[in-house]
Length: 434
Ligand code: URA
Image 1 (cartoon, rainbow, N blue to C red):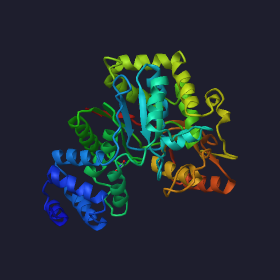
Image 2: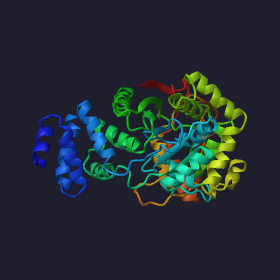
Image 3: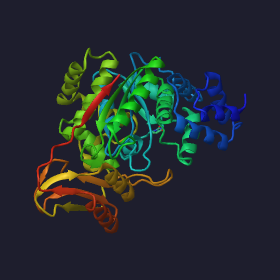
Image 4: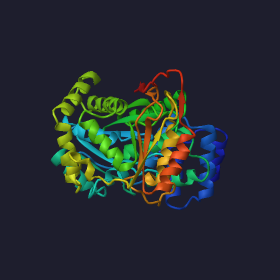
């Protein structure tokens, strides 16, 4: 087999066989196929797409390129969750203890933030002492003990995806539906869960800007999961504005705690319950999502979800007292509010601009090795559709110094829109695909 023939085949829009895909992936990982040939093939995929069977076979090659987790020591159906990335998305931190509190085992690997989107691992590391470098045996033992464990993704998980993603990043081939779908699903398949719930974001702050594109991506990923024998459901939700009120690592932990106390923002709570109820049904803990929602609400009301969060944080070496005293989380020395210049209604709070502004404050990374400031970020006091009076605070910036707070305010003041006429709140949950 010659790589050049496989590039030529894809250039002509033809589907590669399982053997040809395996040749490409294993050859690239072994260093036998150079970057320039893989780049050419990726560009041909970006232009011509992949057939359904080709997509499943390619995903399986990526998933099998490294370690695959065996979760059979944990009793019950293991359900994983993946978000396609957004701003203010702290759903995993709410959902993990919530599900563990109703008896659904939660073992999960998560990533760090890059660009305008945050990462669950960075958020958890803002809790003093919290360890995210658990080994697989440590994770399994912790789930057996308390029902929940979460760690950073190991380098051995789908290493071919890691190398190919880095190449896509510099060859303008990230934005390809089959390449995104296979990349996401390869890591989910390698993580060993029996079932998967995908949180596919739509809008300004998301990969997929339109509902039609998000549905296409969701369908492709659901199909890959189901073909691989893992029951997979996708929930589509809006990412036009940040989710919840807090953007920034410690600020988001404090907000996740409020959700588990039953006092979180309505939109964030709704997305968490929608995803967690799908996961509970796939895990067999409930017959349908309505029943699952009632079970989840019950553990919020009676404090079991919060108790599970305390034991989870303590098990991973963190200061569990933050749950009852969030003032123990890192906080920023400078806090500056931006106030509305006139009476009106909030029309635009673009998620991308808020995520990018928070990143520049230090809440995220422009480059992989940038250092995170756990305390900085932005807290929204208003969301789209809310009425606001002249002089009322719309958001507060938490910064390390006055110049960075000012730069953030100047940047966001350009993109917020306040209008005279009432504005409808945005629809939040936009669909479900299975
Ligand atoms: N996230 C991934 O893991 N892969 C992609 O290709 C895009 C987003």
